[in-house]
Length: 282
Image (cartoon, rainbow, N blue to C red):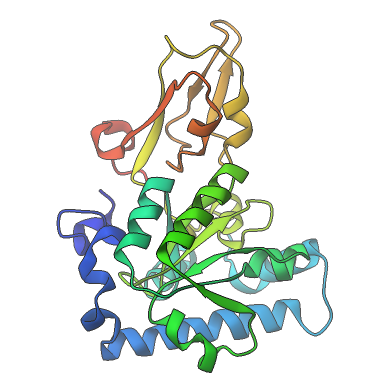
């Protein structure tokens, strides 16, 4: 398990621990203060400073974000400081569809959906792909009136997760700060700020690898390569020698999207902790 699960999971994953969704925890003085600080930062600083009154291109806003928020990847002290800051503010972890559904089942109603910040401000087109939990979901009308959002039931949320998974959006659950699960983002790597911070600049806590890795059953694989199109993290490879695919487990984030593309049911997720080579690779 990742360090957050060990510390806050109580023998399960941190985001599946019912205690972390409880009124007592989420309404604690620290939780309310920290969430308010984080959400004010996200909706105010990043969006208003980078998007501004005039819409910029995705390349312009990405460059501005990098210059403003990300350290030189070679600066170990700066990277460690940023990862600590994200742990104490707002970061996330990739999860497969089944865990996203479990999180929704644990969370309190109502659940709120709104347009994804990354797509709307940096991609130029909004999509209702951000799913917010209590207490944000009940306070958004008063505290975030400028945003277009609506309440949905758990059943509607689970249906939306299924639809977004089929489209190819990977799921990530975000904290504000750890261990408060406040939203599930259904991400498009082309526009996702967290994805780019992790994949291009190595900011680990922007989006942590999931608790699983994908494994291919070579006996079942027919080499069609369809699964490769579903992998946002570049973890699936094709072997011209055996004419089958395999997973580079050091790159795998455990999102599970590749499974839906496999007509032969040749791909499954296994617990990361069962594989020594990637047990601590988050």
